[in-house]
Length: 78
Image (tube, rainbow, N blue to C red; front, side, top):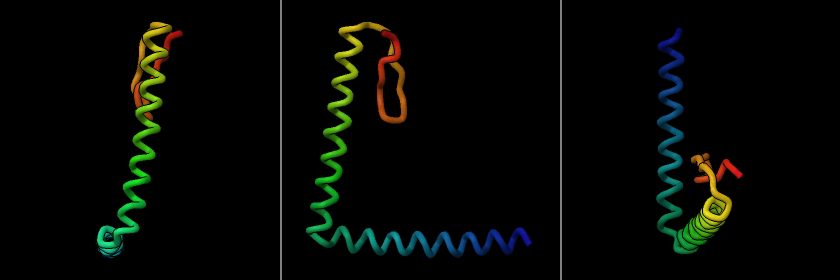
């Protein structure tokens, strides 16, 4: 029973990966889609850099320790 489930999961995972690879290939070949991805990545990068600079100023101005969260460095002491 367990091996049957494992085979089903593997088959479905392979199909999902193949589908995603095909979709990514089509998106990479489409200049408009490629540009859209680049714009999105650029926007996200700007947000991360801005937040990092804000946290850096907070740390230097207020002093204290910093921790690394999923979203980046963050001051934890006032």
